Every structure is written in structure tokens, then in C-alpha cells.
Image (cartoon, rainbow, N blue to C red):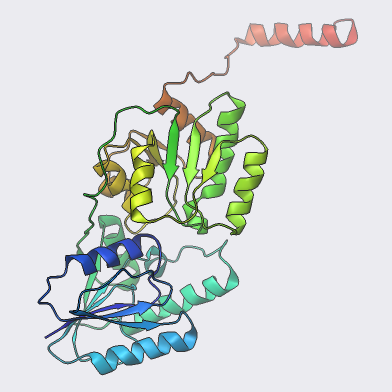
Length: 343
């Protein structure tokens, strides 16, 4: 019996983190085959893990599915970490680890490039048609369980796992103030609303830095350069490895997490392990795995900015409520000031 980790297309974000953690956790006596994406930066692997690497193309994906079928025997255990069941008939005991929330919802794909929209649409159909009785479906949170039950008519097992022990504990405060948001530049990660919030904070004299991890030369990284040119303190570190990420947590004041949708939200767990306060969207997935210090409406840059202010203890200026008499007096006075006589 062998374990087959089927992970084509897994190469970044939380999926990459959990795949590498799974490989590291394997005992040396476990015979393992790994079907991987060529974009995945694999560490040196022990002799018991045999990688089969395929390019991120249509033909590469088809070859990966064929390789899975050829490798698998009836007694083998297959864990599909790419959120999809095998496309072709497979003899082993199949489990699917569903990590992509877009595949078990009908949420809009607006904001994605057309190729990505097409791919996710195809994968939604793939998941529904190839998920078979007898396959085990795992999700990471109760929110994902409810979503999968509603759209797929199945009841998946909730089995979150992660390895966040490597992140050190931090002091309660840091100077200067630094907020960290580790996320890919996908539309649901909501960077643009976060940047607008940081502009509002800058206008109000809040000098906290925002640190992000966006791939260099991407459209969003160019947007960051525009913000920096306007004096907004946003620092982009590009894609980072685990050690650099741990150092960013170590030197941050809080995690800010405006993402509108997550299957897990691994940075929330990493922040908690680092004893880092969390300022996050008031959404189900956040409270599935964490207890935030402050929350906000992720659709409102004003709400995001106000949550940051509350966390920092900054005073919010409230609008003055007039009495009817004060309003009429103001109306009459303003008219006299403008025109030289009462209206």
C-alpha cells in the first residue's frame, strides 16, 4: 500500500503550505508518490517520496490525471489536495481535500481574468460530476461544510490541519506600527478596499504601515507603487518563503484580514500562534478559526479604517447632532453670511 498525494495546480498560498507540511510529516517508512505542479518550489525530498512533476498546461493536467490512474492500485490511498476528485477512473481509496471555496459556491467570478473564470467554471462542473459515493470529502471549517452540503448535496468531514509552531511569539506592541496582510492578489482577497482604507487613515494622520506579500510586477504591485508615490505607507515584500513570513509576523503589530471568502484562512491561525492581534472581516470563516480583536465590513473602506483606529485606540470624530432650532439658526446664519442679508 502506498500514499499518493495528487496535487496538480497546487503551487501557492495555503494549499502550498499544507502540501509541504504534509510531505514533511510523512514517516520515512511510508511509500509516497507525489503528483505536483512544476511551479511548486519543492524542497529536497526523502527517498520514500517519489515526485511526478507536470507543467501547468491543459496537456500537463491531462498527463497528471493519467499518471494518477497508472500509479494507483486498489489498496492505495489517494489524497487529492487540488480540491478535485480524479478525472479518470482510479482504483484506490479516494479522499478529496476541498480547499477552494469557489468550487462549492455559486459566487460571482467577477474580477478574475477570463481564463481563470473559465477554469473555475470547468472545475465546478468537474467536482460535481466526478465526486462519487465512497469517496471521502474533507473540508477545513464548518462554513465550508455548510457550503458543500448546500451546493454538492454531500456532508463532508471537517478536518482542518496546519503546522504553525514555527512562528515565534511576539511582544504585545511594536514600534513603528505595522499591520501585515499575507495574501495572493486574487479579487476576493480585497486588497483594493484595504488600500482605500489606508488612504483614509493617512488623511486622518494615522501613520501605521501596511505590509503585503504581492508578486512583483503584477498589476496589484503596480497599484502599490502608485499608493506609495502618494505617500501611503504600503510596503510590498513580494512572494516570501516561510522563514521570511515568520519574521514579518514577528515584527508586526497586528494581522489585518479583509478577505471576503476563505476555505480556511491559514494566516488567521498563524497570527494566533504568533500571539498577534487580528483585525478582520466580520464573516463566518473568520470566527470558525479565530477570535478577532476588531472586525469590520469588508465592503467598506471606511469600516476597515475605523476598525484599525479602534484597535490603535485612536479617537473617532463623530458628527454633531443639531437640535431643530440649531439647524434653523444655522440655516439663517449661513444664508446671511453668503448673501449679506437674511433669506
